[in-house]
Structures are given as structure tokens and as C-alpha cells.
Length: 131
Image (cartoon, rainbow, N blue to C red):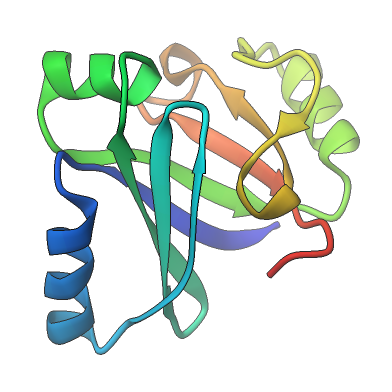
């Protein structure tokens, strides 16, 4: 596995993207709307910042209501998400997603429950035809 991206919940993804572009010389390389949010990806050497801005009530809106803006999850890239989930399951880790589901950029994703991973929401990502 390898680092893929850091997910950041925000109320203003456009403004935060501009800030990160300036501070980190990161380039906005992808933007899409899905699951009631806008996801913006800024590329750095070796990974991405994924900025998650809710458009309606949903997971990110509820996260912002409870925790405020900030780091939402860390994502690890895998070539076999099914095997990664099986390994987590066999290790006794609680899964948010028992099976992979569609994510941004056409990737398959699945989350591990933070109560099993030291309070960190971990996302497995298997890249599809996108970036």
C-alpha cells in the first residue's frame, strides 16, 4: 500500500483550494460533484489533498457540524481492495464498508472504522481508469 490522499472537510472548498495552491504550490487537478458534496483534488508530489465541501445534508455536513473543518480521513492506495478488506477483517478491524463502493474519479473505495484504527478514519482506494 501507499499514501494516496488526505481528505479535508471544509465549508469553502474553493477558498481552501486557492490557499493550498499558494501555500504548497499544489495544482487543482480534479473536481467533481457526487454524494451531495464537491470533491476537489490538489496534487502534491506523492499524493493529493482531497477537499470535501458539502452541498446538502450528508456525511461531510454532519462531520462539519460535529467536528468543524479539518482532517476527515487518510487514504491508502491498494492494487487489491478486496484483499485489503479481507486482511482488515481477519485482523478484527471493524469495517464501515463490508464491500468496496464507487468513489471519486471512478475509484473503488472502502472505509475502516476509526474505533479500530486509533481514531483515524482510514480509506482504502483502488484506482480505476482515472488518476
